[in-house]
Image (cartoon, rainbow, N blue to C red; front, side):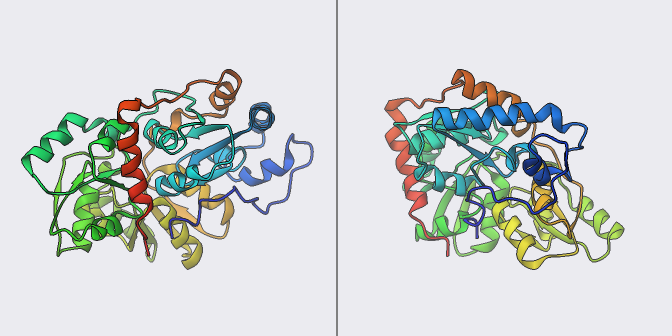
Length: 342
């Protein structure tokens, strides 16, 4: 299911508002961007669209990007797995990654001859910061012969020390593909524990890394929402603690969340993840009511139309990967992409 959102952004069927600039694009985000704010955003959007043509550039945007990025300037949108897959097929000279730094590194690994830009070098990740290449070498020494599966939310240096990578969308399939009785799954402890629940026959060893967005959710949050909205459907990301996932109706990657909502069409739904997920799905599904809570990712929100425009104007900030580790890191990602998820 995680492939479904790995596509060119589709138009949202809403009536353009006369008198506003770029009325067709505004129609896509009118539920989330007040009409009074749109004239301030439109010049950046117009410039980005022009610069993409001039630079032969494409914009890859993660599902956590704000609607004004996700639905107006992005060429390819999706979760980490979808973006990794699509990055291989990008027909452009320049890739702008509207997401966080490890995603831009992954795009560069898969496109070594292309220029990869990230609009803000400060767009990091708590999971990527939780583990180093030296830590992985220490784990390999401690558990000789145990395969190491590394979440893509890590640096290229960490990927280079791993056997293969995974995302939240294919983690179960990746672990199963190893046919090993024992696997190290790093660095997201909660994702590993949730995968363990699905594959009890494999012993999964974990690392104490957490996503600062998902680790803050609690089972009490879910119960409070159910008390306030009887019959609401609760969908949790597998980076959430296992007791939160247990309280939910469904758990999956961001693309799997999107597919579930579009296919099942619940009347009311809570997405236990980053806030922009609900906004981006709601823009195309006005008949579904999205109830929050949600948590904001400060790193994803470092992306803006203004700094995407500046990135294309100045060709900054270029993301590079040390050639001494690039081949090994690329191999770990490519092994992941070879695993069939269904």
